[in-house]
Every structure is written in C-alpha cells, then in structure tokens.
Image (cartoon, rainbow, N blue to C red):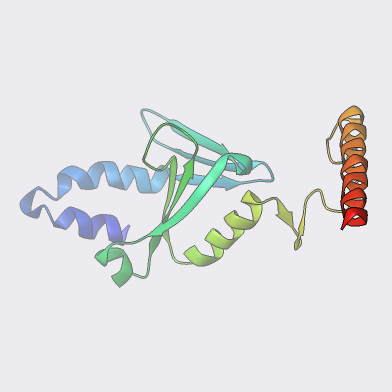
Length: 154
C-alpha cells in the first residue's frame, strides 16, 4: 500500500484520483498457487481473474522501479506464448521476490524435489502411449545398428 500511496503522490494535488482504485485493488487482490498453476483475482464491481498453468509459462522477469527498490519490493512478470507483448500476469509488491521466482522456475520446468516429474518412469507411465513407445524403441534399435555398422567400416 505504501508503494501505491507514493506513486499517487507524484500527481500532486490530484493524488486521490489514482489512489482510490489502487486502494481497492490492494484490498481485493488475491493470488492462489496450487499444483496446476497460479490464479490471480481482483476487483469489486468488475471481478477479474487470470489463471495460468505452469506448463504455459514461457518466461519470468523481475522488475522494480526506483520507488520499489527503495521499499525493497519487486514485481514478477510472467509471460506466456500469447500474441501480446506484455506480461500475462504480474505479481506485484513482493519482498521475497527471488524465492518466488525460483519456485516458479522449478514448477515451470516440472521439477519436483530436485528431479524431473517424469524421471525414472516407463514411457507408458509418463503419459506416452505404448505404440509410440514401441516405435521409439524400434528407431533406437535401428540407430544403434547403423552406428555399429559405421564403426565397423572405420
């Protein structure tokens, strides 16, 4: 809230104009982190909600302006592969921004407890159909045979 008040004061005597919507945004803004993704919702008259799955996240940026650095705050901008050049979701007003950024990177990459989510699983268990897995095994066997034939020639 301090950040919103300080940025509103930059307008001088008209500081209350942006302060009113920022006050309601501050009190209604909620973030939810679960196993599938992040959801952000805010608003009183017009309720808005943005939900992103970790698989859709393409890039994560940390940004902070002079006032935010003075208050030791930062914003995490989360981008997806949408047509928009701006961030899909911005998590603002964070003190522990590096810890949250690292958490999002691990979730984005599918890492759980230091290992990839599908590590050590058979292809059928990892969500790969069995016919695709058998085709991949055949391709691997053929490549192995070609490699052996080339090594015998040389």
